Structures are given as C-alpha cells and as structure tokens.
Image 1 (cartoon, rainbow, N blue to C red):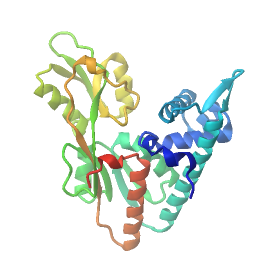
Image 2 (image 1 turned 90 degrees about the horizontal axis):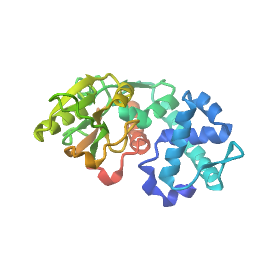
Image 3 (image 1 turned 135 degrees about the vertical axis):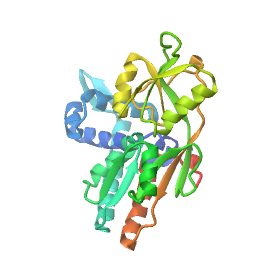
Image 4 (image 1 turned 45 degrees about the vertical axis):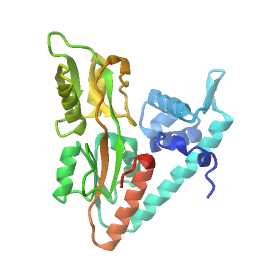
Length: 297
C-alpha cells in the first residue's frame, strides 16, 4: 500500500499522535473548527492548538486564513487524505481484532499514555472487548502481578524482568520553578506516590540537596496542569509534556535519571484471546509512538 508523504518522513512519526490524525481527518471532512470540536467533543482552541502542533512537527502549513476564513493548503490537503487512510486502516484493524475474540482484554495504562493514543484506540473499539484501567505505574504493576490485568504499560527506573517490550525514555521537569517562601524550596505538584515521576522528583532533589516541598498531590494530570498555573514544578515524559511548559535548563534544576516504559503481557488462553491480545499489543506499540530507536526488548 502506498503511504505517500509518510514514506520519507518517518522521523516525524514519533511526535505525531493518533489524536492529531483523527483531528486532521475530521477537520478536512467538516471544513470547520467549531464543527470539528463538536464532533470530537473538545474545545475549538484545543483543535486549533493540535493543528498548530502538527504544523510545527511536519514543518509546513496545513491551513491558511483567507479573508477571515481558513482553507487547507495543498500540502495540508495531501496530508489530510493520508491521515484519513491511516484512520480508516486503524478502524478496520480494531474491527478485525474485535471480531476475533469474544473475551474482554483488560488493559492498564498510565494517564499520559492513555492520552497519547490508547484513548483513541479504545474509543474506536467502542469498549466492546477491551476494558481500560488508568492509574499510576505502581498500582498498575500490582494489578498485573495479581492477574487483574492482561496488558499493562508501566514506568520503572530499570527494565522489568517480565517485560514483553521495553523502551528507554527521559523524564523532564515542567512548570515554573518558583522558590516558595521560607526554607521550603521548590514547590512540587505531583501525582500519587505510586507514580514513578513522583518518586523521581523527590529522590532527585534530595540527592542534589535542593530544598523542596510537596504543595499538592493530585488525582489527575488535568488537576496538575491547572495547579501549575500558580507556579510549581512537576515531572513529565519528555515525549509528552501535556499542557505544562518544559523547564528551561537555565533554571539549574538537577537532571532527572532516565527511565523505562515497560509493556507487560500475560500468557493468555484460549488461543483466540491470545492472538487478539498480541495484535492489540502490536498496534498499541505503533500508534502510541514508542520509538524503535529506544527499544530495549
């Protein structure tokens, strides 16, 4: 199958989430930012931001504004057509896999990886055969070890022995490192203690003898991003900063250690369920933008 523009630009694929392709496809169909926002149940500024992010990644304009209205550029139209082919291919893939198994596959992912692609995959599946659990890495790992999950994507400092696949990645500081009053130092805004990033933030600052305090422990990334508007620091995956601005190196914060993304898969039976699980793992690896250049297993 011809892949057009994507054949010569594999270097960009690590940065292009499936959500961007979905948004681009719908926008080309509706030719309206507001209608696209309604279809995807997002805000119009969020749609505009995704298109601008995609333009920055690919290096050319996708839409242009003419007399107060926007229109697709020639390159933007070509890209949108290719995105439609990929989205349609993904939709057909999940339908094929869904029809191959009548067993529910339980998948556990951290919230950031859910947002990076698993959400789009699970929505495409309509929830008929996949049960997605979202939580911090520590909790998901415990659930997998207890047999409560069939697939788990969790973070750890070193690769887990039982990982089916593993990738190295670099956590980074994000936010505004405003020193708090008194001797409390850097204010941290973090997820629960069972989140690897929570542990790395505290351990790194303690090792560097940098004063800090935990201003709040949040239940979700949305709460963290909202809280960071008042200042403070958090830790995010370098490949997925979310809505938090990455901290400038001039702030002098100690470098965080590299970490590992682990994909754990149970040895499922019967064979139909195992085959469907393996196919899902392959597609998750592809559409969640895990770079092969950092793959360990």
